Amino acid sequence: MFPFSAVVGHDDLRLALLLNAVHPGIGGVLVRGEKGTAKSTIVRALAALLPELDVSKHCRFGCAPGTTDCPDAPHDGSERRPARLVELPVGATEDRLVGSLDLEKALTEGVRAFQPGLLAAAHRGVLYVDEVNLLHDHLVDLLLDAAAMGRAHVEREGVSVSHPSQFLLVGTMNPEEGELRPQLLDRFGLTVAVKAARDVGVRTEVIRRRLAYEADPVTFAAKWADEDAALKQRITDARAKLPRVSLPDSELRRIAAVCAAFEVDGMRADLVVARAATAHAAWRGATEVEETDVETAVRLALPHRRRRDPFDEPGIEEQQLEDAMRQAAEHAGEPDGPDDDGPGGGELPEPQEGPAGNGNAPGDRPAPEPAPAFKARLLEVPGVGEGAPGKRSRARARTGRIVRSSTVDGSGLHLVDTLTTAAPHQQARGRSGPGLLLTAKDLRKAVREGKESNLILFVVDASGSMAARQRMSAVSGAVVSLLRDAYQRRDKVGVVTFRGQTAEVALPPTTSVDAAATRLKKMRTGGRTPLADGILKAHKILEIERLRDPRKRPLVVLLTDGRATSSGLGGDPTKDALKAASLLEQTAVVVVDCEQGHIRLGLAQKIAEALQGTCVRLDHLSADHLAGVVRAA
Image 1 (tube, rainbow, N blue to C red):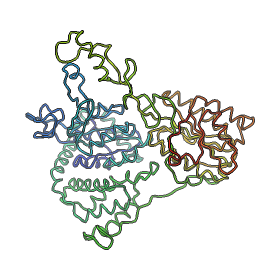
Image 2 (image 1 turned 90 degrees about the horizontal axis):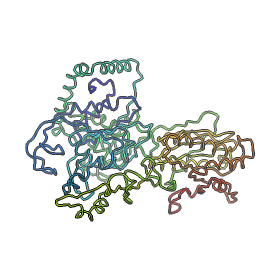
Image 3 (image 1 turned 90 degrees about the vertical axis):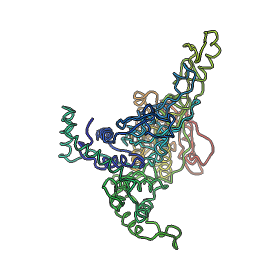
Image 4 (image 1 turned 120 degrees about the vertical axis):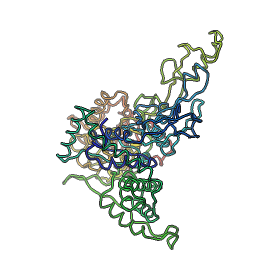
């Protein structure tokens, strides 16, 4: 294993991991960064620094001697072992994470027994989730709940178990592959963004150390053994000192003032900053939290909590932090108790605002500022698919609710139906003791139905007929709302725009919908309306995506007023558009009619009919406008 001390740079990441090792109650670390930045290497190296544990013999959960709230208690004897690093794979099932009924004992001995999962194996160690942004959301919810409560509760298949599950949670992710939902981001205690160094000297040293490690791992590790041992001892000393570190009221007010200045939601941020500041003081060897501890904790705990929207850029600028800390310094010296402004005293600091910008090229007509976004109605693909897990359309899945059993299809054992099928034949099979006698004919598989993610391809009319009537503002707001909906449902999204003489791919299909929002802000408008070209471009993208992933079903969302004033096919623009529409007959399509005014030509409806899709008026796209769900068929 690559030594922790041998890692070059990434000071914030190493500090965040060490603070959590000192105080696991901070809530773990989320590591965001581009590929090839040693994220996984650093996390795996941390496990070797954690102090050895005293564990109870024969305890499946690795509890400390004397633990009474464990299903395996009372314990007999103890032993020492290293802290574990448990990795949760992206494709893990709920059973693998939380545990399940021990089928072997249930079927052979006729007893109900619990088979522990990864949450039990990670108790008092490190639970590492690589590519946490690609993990199923319900699994992320489960492990974050366990990390917050320190216990895992299992209620399933007739088994009811609650066991200790305290671990250092570390997740790594590449933002280019998709973001975590804000609710899940907030559950991680600290977050660190890592980037590859641009300094030639630093990059040279990284290469030198990596090549030396690959040439002779044993010798390389021995070279850094003393430094790793020193870090390990420092963690042990800081853990022992932590209960004696005091947090003065002045620093509590400073923490509250900074969190208020950044307008973070809820109180979790305040608590995380307080715990991280206390751990940092213990790491320094101090007995009292000071301003420098609070500032370090704020840098690590607040960047991901400032995001008000999935499309907001994460992070804190240095000037914003300095301003907030300067304002908070005034509150740090205030006395306790109520005053004229109410309990707690004083006005809150001014909110910190991020930079604003405009990415349009000179001479282009920029897209108007999007109208206020709304809660979009659910657009979904008809039928039942088999795509990647998500939250949009119905799909057969490995997880989800069981709808029936089958002898052919399904995922996992349908226990009840298997036992029900085998029960009437026990006497004929000569059963004389506990347990059931089963044959292959008795086995029933569980057919589950859940939700899948889809490819949502936005085809946006950016021509002059749209911009001239000031409709692009409403269209932009609608697209942002649909993008936000796609973000929450784990979809892959792409954007095609058409204007002037041709169509262009503004964003190739990606899981990073914040990139789609950024491209939308830079979208240029004006010119003629090459509707046929827009549809043809969408068709070409779908053909490529089908080759990449045949199971991911697409949904095309075409935003247009239906006018066609130019065509690259050389014929009548409207007829060419209708002819191109026939290529998407087998694809789920929703046409958003952007036509406004009292006199309506209904051209978008004709396009929808040619596409065999659904036509929805722009002002009906909000979920709050009409009850019910739009199904794209």
